[in-house]
Structure formats: structure tokens, C-alpha cells
Length: 453
Image (cartoon, rainbow, N blue to C red; front, side, top):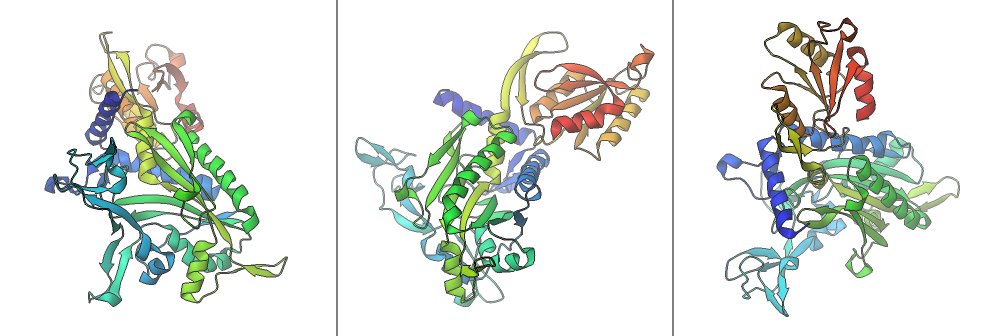
């Protein structure tokens, strides 16, 4: 796909997200706040479905992983020990011509000369370190003793609670601690819609193990995480694995893989899977003076476990799903004329709304009553939407555009007016193929649940 059409595709996706209530600019009526986004009614459902499925496969379906939910604010000593206070920074460059503030890796190099990507100017400052953590104060006074930071990652809460969770969960190595939560980074230049934001959510697992298990578990978790993305509807050929070279990895990492996705704006990282060795627990043990060792009852040895970390971004995953799902094809309107149809081809398990229910006519009391009866039947089992406004074809199109995989239409056959054999049956429509089948109302829950799972 060419660069211009990629740009056009991204513009259509951003427009759809606002128009249909997936994602809004934060504080929009006041001009917005760069790098911050609000999720609307459909966006929050999509996001919640992603998080719920991640938790299901990473925690509930495993015996070796438990969960936690750490505080956003932590003792400042945590960030000192982890190295964030001193080293969590990006090199920043200013363009003196257009006043743009840029990350050093955004600078364009043309014929050996560095140029501003915004204006093409060559009058640039030297790179300087810019700490990405948001500083704040705890308590009534604003002095050095009350400084802390909004967490830039969720992982450190897991490391500092390692001993407590080990004791209460009674797990043996290897085992993991999972967490989903907000993180904050004062990005120099937020960009690409929600991809690089200043406030975002992470889904992280710290999987603790013995040193000799580390590299094998790194390979294992890479395979598991690739499977996760395929299971929520991202095609394998759109995912790429980057084996991060040693000189580009964190100094404590023995191996890091980046799982990348082909966004319309280019190939970008969705998730990192890193073998962090025993660096984090060792740092916190040293700084706190508290033992974070694991006691092996079989060998009677004490040691600091190593850790493999799959770390995924919720917002990036949601954006990838929307980009992957966005599609345009042609379908006939009510008069049989072909028209462009916008479809979000979400996998049913992550679709914000699973099924829409329509009475064929809104002025036919019996049809409306039966349709609402079906809504009440399905609602305890899935998120459903009732729509009686407009022609049935238009109602289908509205649901196609927000990714609803199934539509149930209550018509006169449902009432048995044309054929008694068809009483209490409905038309079930598939979003992607637009094919329709006749099914019994009594079979709807089982049929839809099996296709959504």
C-alpha cells in the first residue's frame, strides 16, 4: 500500500473513531490536551474486552500466575532504586527555525545533513536528556522530601511487592504476577493518534524463574504473546518480531523481542518481551535493605529469581485492532444499487457490541414486543443493542460500521403469520458475509455464545 493511501486510511480511521464514539480528544471543548485521549461508549467496551481477554488467558486460565493492582503513586525511593529517576529520559532536540520540540530519533538525515522533519530547517540544538516522568508532590508542602512521580510503568509495583505476593500465594518457581494499570510518560512529541500518548494503560506480566530457565521462557512467552494477538483478530502476517540487538537493549537484558504491527503510519511496537535477569529485584533488595530472595525448599538454597517480562500496551492494542478491522466494500442499498459499506471486522470476542436486535417495523407492536423480549433474553450473556429507527438496511450498515458481528431481525415469520412452522424463529445476519440464516429464538444464546467465545 502506498504512503498517500496509508495516510488517507488513517484519516478515515480517526474520523470514524470520533464519529461513532470510540475515541475523543481529551478536554476537547477547551482545545484538547496533546497526548491525552478519552474513550467513548464503544471505545471503552472494546478496551475492556481486550483487557478482560488478556486477564483470562494470562491469569484465569493458568495455575502459575496471580494478579495484583498496584498504586499509581509510590515512594520516591522506588524510582531511585529502579534507575528511573536518573536515567529514564529521551534525547530532545529543538528546531530554532520553527520552534518544534522533537525526539532525537525524529530528526531527518538528508545527504549527511540533519534537518527538522517539520520545516526542513537545519538550525538544531544539540540533543539533551529530558526525563519522561511526571513529578508531583505528596502532602501539604512542596519540597524535596515530598516529591514523587506518576508511575511510568506498572512493573515496579510488582517487584516491590514480590515478597508479599510470594508468601500469600504460596507459588513455586516459575510463577508470574500480572497487572493491568495506568502509566504516565511526559512524551516530548506525542503522535500517531493514541499510539504515543502521555497517559496510557499497560498489561504486564513479570514471570519469575531460575537463571537457567530464562532464555527458554523468553522464547515460550514470545510464542504465547503472538498467539494472543492472533486470537483477538490480528493476522499473523501483519505481526513482525524484532530481535533487539544487544547494543540497543537495556544493559541488564539478556534478550528482548519487540512484537511489531503494520500500522497505516508504519511498523511500530505493540509489545516487548524481555528477559530482565535479576536486575530489578537485586536493585530493590540493595536499596531497601529487605530480602527479596526466594527459598527453594528442595535444594535449601536462597537466591534472587530472574524474570521474563511480556509488556503490552492496551491503547496500542486497541488501535491495532481498529486499524486491522477497518474495511470498505460494496453492498446493495434498499433499491439494489451498490454503495460503499464501511465495516469494522472485529473478532467477535473483542467487538464492543456482540449482537444487534431489530424489529422489522417499529410501528408494529407485536414485532417490537418480541424484539425487546429477545434483547432481555440475550443481555445477561452479552452486550446487545436494540435499534428500531430507519430502514432495516440502514440499521445493518450502522452496526457494520461499529463492528457488531451479528444482527437479529424479528419479522412477520417470527410471529407465525406467513408460516406456522417459522413461529418463534428469527433472521440471524453475519456482518462479514452479510449472509442470513433462520434460527430458533430458543437456540440464540447457545449459537451466539459459541461464535463469540
